[in-house]
Image: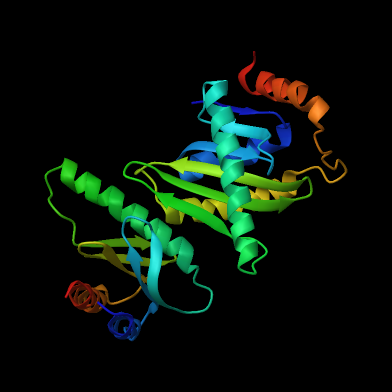
Length: 118
Length: 155
């Protein structure tokens, strides 16, 4: 994993229409590792809350026998938060408009996760 | 776990910070280790030890920073197996304060950092501007310490 490769992955995610920002986040710490954000997106807050959300969803999935969580989509009135696991230590996080093409964003995020893990 | 304060203006920001960051222990103190407020300690001796160590770490780190040409440092973070420790100074109208936060795996350093910033802002807003803190003289040290401990642990 290197920062150039992470940057390229984020660039691809950010090209999806409706994405306001994307980042790699340390899963345990909730801190940004690399980011590409539009102005006005509070990256630190998104990173911290996305990691917290991922931890809680993973805990719920484990408790209900759901196994490992690979992708989380949180749709809210003002936008969408997407989180993909990039084992063993990272998360790929995207903040997007409410009407985003989630399938396309997910595809790019899973690619980014694979690239980060490679 | 209870929150106890010596200076009442610290209580509301502290209670909110503890809840938001899911912190297990928080100590608000002066750079000399005098405790203004705390959450998570039930024994005075533990609190005294933690505040003294926190103040000492702060002082030695600041001295180290000054040796390399910095005026100070932003924050210190130690990651352990079960707990993380976050130690940072902040400026308020009541002078410099040091905040020691201990947190577990139920939260993260990212969340603690995020809510610590809000906590500092809340402390700055809540601090009385017309009462500058007086330095504690050696002659008054013991009585001041006993007064603080009585306030914190109701003894």
